Amino acid sequence: MNKNLEIGYNGELIAAKYLREKKYEIIERNYRNKYGEIDLIAWDKKALVFVEVRTKVGQQFGSPEDSINWKKINKLKRNAAAYTALKKHAGVYRIDAVCIVLGENSSIERVTHYQNITFWRVG
Amino acid sequence: MLVKVASALNLGLNTMEMEVEVNVASRGLPAFDIVGLPTKAVAESKERVRTAIINSNIQFPERRIMVNLAPGDVPKEGSFYDLPIAVGILATVMGFKLPEKSVFFGELSLDGTLRHVKGALLLALFAREKGIKNIFLPKASANEAAVVKGVNVYPVESLSQLLFFLCGQITFELAVYKVNQSEQSVSAAEFDMSEVLGQEQAKRAMEIAAAGNHNLFMVGSPGSGKTMLARAFPGILPLLNEKESLDVTKIYSASGRIPPRGSLMTTRPFRAPHHTISPAGLIGGGSRIKPGEVSLAHRGVLFLDEFNEFPRTALEALRQPLEDGCISICRSKEKITFPSQFTLIASANPCPCGYLYHPKKTCICTRREIEKYKKRISGPVLDRIDLYVEVPVVDIKVLSCDERIKKSLELSEKIRQRVVKARDLQQRRFDKEGIYTNAEMRNKHIKKYCRLSKEVNQVLINAGANFQLSARAYFKMIKIARTVADLENVQDIEVSHIAEALQYRPQDKDGG
Image 1 (cartoon, chains in turn green, red):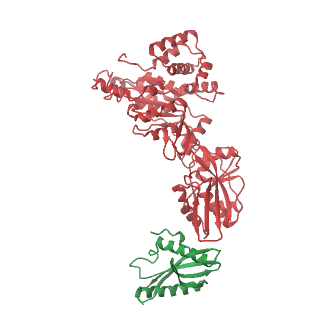
Image 2 (spheres, one colour):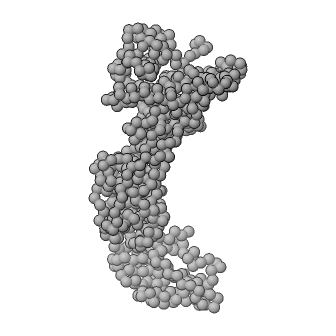
Image 3 (cartoon, chains in turn red, yellow):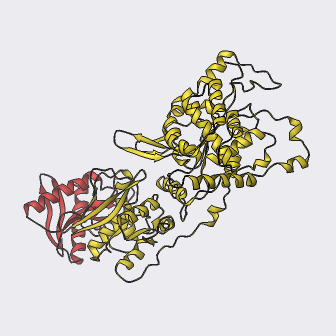
């Protein structure tokens, strides 16, 4: 496996574990359709949550938060809409982000969970 | 869930009912959208509302929020809709009932406090007219609204305070109108009339102009004191009466010129725009129509220094406001009428170099140059000016005269007392006519209030032939004579009054 893919995969594992601890029920991983990919889909009580996981080793090349741009958010919105339509979900849903920074030897420096990133004003 | 919050919309000096509809959906992706033709400042209210709610320690709902500003076809301008939007959102989330017959108006600061807004007075007047009982306004703007009796003005300090009130946890102290002392004491005049040495004729003309609200044109060489005289003019004007004060404050409130915690304006405005002003700046206009200098000078003074230097388009545009006392501005999207009943004081040099008719210096202008200079002001504009006065050069000897003479010069206050008396007389006379001063008289008023004896009429007819008076100028002479008579507290116009009025006609020294 390519090194960056491996980092991303590890990040998603960390995020899933983190969310499970927060009592989220994860129902999909790496859900793919023609609009792109959603890293995690989970239930937070009655809300359906689409989670984008971003992982970085160190922050010298920018923080994981910085790497989420409006294009990605728009993609997620479209994808989430498609998913809710497909599954006939008629309730509240939202888009979250989990940003993870890893240390040199794969140690976890921080995990930050952002609820509802739809309002992020990003470049 | 849908909540409707009443608010209002200011268009020029008119106010319209507006409804803020807030719908918080129970499905879908969290979003926050505003529809109903919001301009930039309104669209940005999203960010202010969201941050203010969060900073008031209330969770912002992660729901799909749709705000509609109805009616949807009128462009919404300004930042006053923050408060109704925030109240609407919180009402849906927290489920409190909004008080009946209430309007909300205000701009939110990011920390959840409310900021001063323009147009609070207009809103209060509108509320009284429409039978709206309660208005919720930022505390800084509440005072000007509290002038209006019969409406409960709630001075809101912050969003959280308002919420506690709406949830029934605290009570509000209604705003009570307080006269702002610091504003009252501001004396409008820079100079006192007694500081101007000589220039007795000009001072007399100013007294007449102040007493009857007549327009005045001063011509004189550079440095003769034209500007100083004009700057001293506010000092001899009476204060605004109650109705005038409300009218003037309305204009200033609509254009956001009333300071926070400000009260009604009592001194007459004095506007002195520079001659590089654009026609829209002078008359009013812009893509969102705003009052111009002529309206900001309503019931006050518009001083145009270096009259000939103003752009011709701007000067010609003065015709309607000078004649009608109001200005209608029509643009493709809207038509707005602003009042503009002002005293015009214009000043100019006699020629480009400035020394024509100077007793000692020689004018270096060619005849053509002088003609060109004079032509910059058209006949129709000149015809609308009542009083012409020459401001001659003051002899240096007079300037260095001894203190005794200086002390004998009249103080502004003394002149003002005479002006106030004359104006009181006019106000009583025109009580039922809807006007205040002699200059506003229409022909029917002149017929009614300016009876001329045979003798006086003969003088006027002779003068009309000699001076080639236009019909308008003829009536202007009568109006000025009326003011002169009022200053003397005389019932009927006498020959001496007409004779004085005739002195303020433009004099053509070149004899044709």
